[in-house]
Amino acid sequence: MANYPASQPGASRHTLSVLVENRPGVLARIAGLFARRAFNINSLSVSPTERPDISRVTVTAEVATIPLEQIIKQLNKLLHVLKIVELDPEDTVDRELVLVKVSADAKTRSDVLEIVQTFRVRVVDMHPESLVIEATGSEAKLDSLLALLADYGIIELVRSGSVALSRGPKALSEKVVGSEIKGR
Image 1 (cartoon, rainbow, N blue to C red):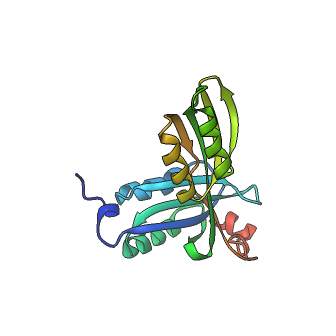
Image 2: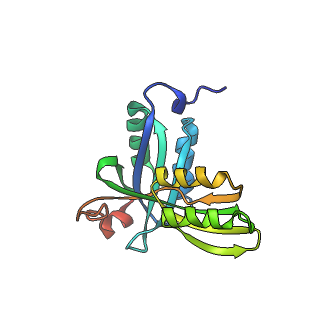
Image 3: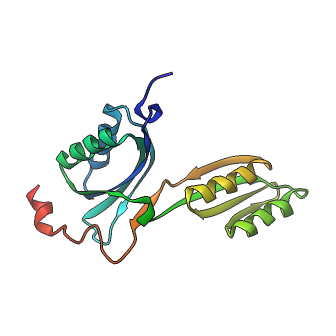
């Protein structure tokens, strides 16, 4: 087994929020930086922000503190990267979306629907032999839901990856102005 940094002592989960210019190739450069250093990205989510010319990249990875500092320094050097913040788990709202198709025939459907109600999630598609369930929440909540649904047979699933914002009134993009975008 390869000795990747995520399996080394001192590695822990970190979430980075990266503001970038909304341009082709930026995501590839960010992912490439992690790959060159042999760090596995646990979760990756990208979308435009309140400003259409800026996108937010949320990256979750398991790394030790010193390599993380090096990654942040390297990210800051990348073309079209505007701002990087490591989000404090205690001061962050973090959510994920999962769509899961689970076996649910006439015998098991009521049991699966009871789990749906308990977790306050939604059924978005019904078939005589299966249900597609949509759930949002923390990674721990979704892991618990999936563990219960596994007993009925998960046919397939997809997870969005984590999206996160810091708590409070301040925005990561507050100090990013148009001149920074044109000047890089």
